[in-house]
Image (cartoon, rainbow, N blue to C red; front, top):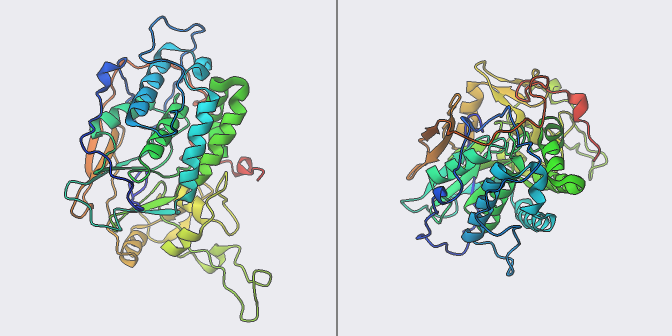
Length: 416
């Protein structure tokens, strides 16, 4: 599954027991929450009013980091309330009065340490048998639609001892609240690191965020500290895992399948100096990569390369399914692959996985996987809830190409 066609992931050791009697407080005690019609692109962004609203915030602001450095469910509720209120009552430039840079720094550093330690491909619900009431919620692109995220969390239920969440990337860009969306998910990751899993999408990159609005959003919200905040976000993006396997049978990634990158060694060579390297896998024909190769890929790159040896991250984030058989370069995008139904079948059989591929047109939606096999997706969709904050786009959506269609590869070349 990918974010467009859900796939799966894996789990690590379970954390300290989490109370099962914690019930998420309804959002109706906060200022009314609104959502857009999809968890995808927005053609609008934050309010441009120059003066704050007279509507008082529901909690004390600015937010501060917990004195004992331990996040709680109450702290996350406060974060939700603060972000929801500020999105409707403050101009974007007042964001530091809600979340100071010092609190941002502590949150993103704490989350980054957790993320960078996780493997490229997570193993979820694999080490021990899941309980009979365990469920896994798989979420695709959110693209800065913070209010959609709030509705989804209320509709699906907050993460808990028996409710796992796998987010398939694309948290930022296009929508007006990419920063709030990403930071809320990082807070959940810190609070429940073994119940909330965040994968990387193709928009969690320097290139995409510089074109599709997130960089401008951050600079607008944090002003002269914006470059610092943006760099910290990019560093955190590099730590996001690439894929997951749920319950040993469901594969999820933002894009999909990936190639094998051959690095054969000659008989007489020792070490890396004399190793023979195939720089152009096309010359020898493309073949599907293995989970072992995925585990060894170097994901800590600002922009996944489209040439050279480290091609797997770009494949996992940018590849698309095709009705045509075989594996071929994704020439329309200029990065990643196109894979046919035969490749899907081969990959599933080779690694004893099951297919659970679904798309859901123009509505907001998420998928729930349930025991015992976790291989039958239950689709939950929702329509737009209005009204919602009126905003203007942080990028020119009329002139900028759709990142899901083609790329300017020359522009993706970035300094290390």
